[in-house]
Image 1 (tube, helix red, strand yellow):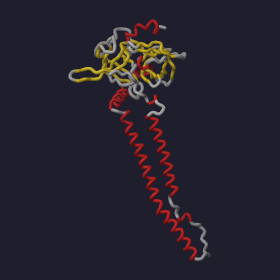
Image 2 (cartoon, one colour; image 1 turned 90 degrees about the vertical axis):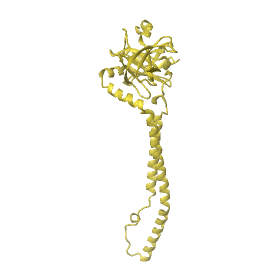
Image 3 (tube, helix red, strand yellow; image 1 turned 120 degrees about the horizontal axis):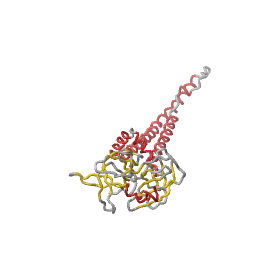
Image 4 (tube, helix red, strand yellow; image 1 turned 30 degrees about the horizontal axis):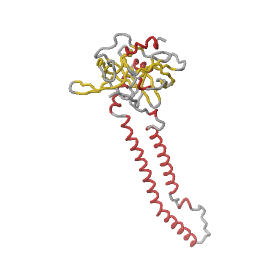
Length: 317
C-alpha cells in the first residue's frame, strides 16, 4: 500500500485534537470554579457570626427569644432548600470531570500507540549518538497546505529533497529546520516518474546544515541504515534497519530499493542514510512482502542515483 498522503499533523489544523482537548480542559475548569464558588456563596451563614456582637442587656427577654425564634425559622427554611441545589451542582461537576477524563483517555492511544512507543524508544536510544544528532539538523518538515511530509537539505543555501506526492501540483512549500527556523521554498524539480521534488529556499540563507548524497556503489543486501523523518504525529524520529535490495514495483518503471525499517505515514521524503552518513535513498512508500511463511511490511525508497540527471542542472548551480 503506497503512502500517497501524509497523516494530518497536529499543527496542520486550526482546531486540532490537542487544541480541542485544551479548550475543553479550560472550559471545564472555568465551569467547576464557577460552580464551586456559587456553592460556597450559597452556604448558610453561621448564626453566631451573623448576630450583632453588642449585647443589649436592657432589652426584654421576650423580645430576645422572639428574635432568635425568627432567625431559627429562616435558617431551617434555607437548610431545607440548600441540599437539593448543592447536590445538583456537585453532580454536574462530577459529570464534567468524567467527560474530560474520558476525552483524554480516548485520545492517548491515538498518539501513544504500540508502534509509536516502539519507535520513540528506539529514537531515544539512537539520539544519544552524536552522528544522529547531526543528521537530524538537516532533516526538515515540509508543509504544503494540509499536506505534510519529511525532507532533507543538501546545500548550505537551502536545496531540499522530498517526494513529489507531498508537493503535488503546488509551486512552493514551507520548510522548517530543527532549530525552528522556517523558510519559503520554490519547487524547481517535480518528477512524478520517480516521485521526487526538489525545492530551493527563497531567502538568502547560508550555512544551513546538510546531508551528503552517496556517489559511489551505494548499497548491498544486509547493509545497516538509518531513517530519519516525521512519522505519525512526531518529528525527526530516527530508526534503524537494513537494506533488502532492489525490487520491481507495479507503479514505477524503475526498480525501487526495499528496506527493512519501521516506516509510517509522514515518513514520505525521509532520507535513508548509510553507515558513512551519506544518503542512499529517499523513502516514498511501504509495501508487503513474504519472508518465509509470513507477510511483512517493508519500506520502499528511491535510490539516490536516480537523481544523477539533476546533478549539473540543479545540484551544481
